[in-house]
Length: 193
Image 1: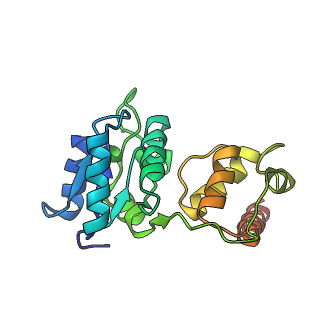
Image 2: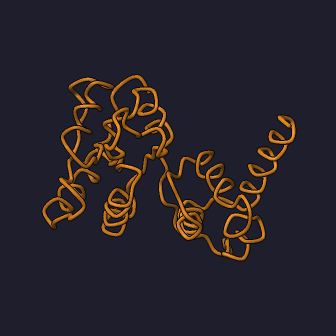
Image 3: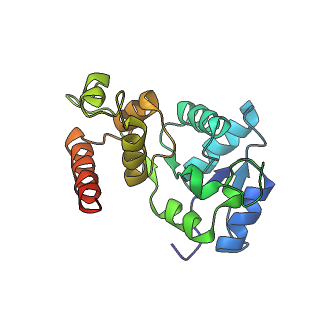
């Protein structure tokens, strides 16, 4: 994505907006949440933007960012989501928090090129925690590494086992695709030994 997105981008603060302007120019449209306590007025503003332009939620890959994302999704289920990995949003300065404002322009463009939309639940689509445990994503050695590979591949942001389960269900990502990614990453791991 080299041109500015047509959608309104929901970010947490002014520094995020400034970074997006560096990336896409002054024509980028943003709504700043001003923190994790979303008020009714901000939610209504986001709802109106969704009706007119479409909305992409692009919050920091941390707990407050996930809270904002969840609040918006509950109020407006049809918004799109762009995710950064924690390492992509890491500040170069020590002791600074994660944030969109710290991401490289390339990572920002990639995230906005790979937006996800919650899919309405399809009859018969089910992934259980038992499925994730069987694949070694919910418990066992290397579960965190495996979740990272899945989250990275599908651009889900940083997730624990419960969050991964919820994301796979919301985005209707088939278990076969998850297995394929794990098998491919295992093949790559074996080749590097």
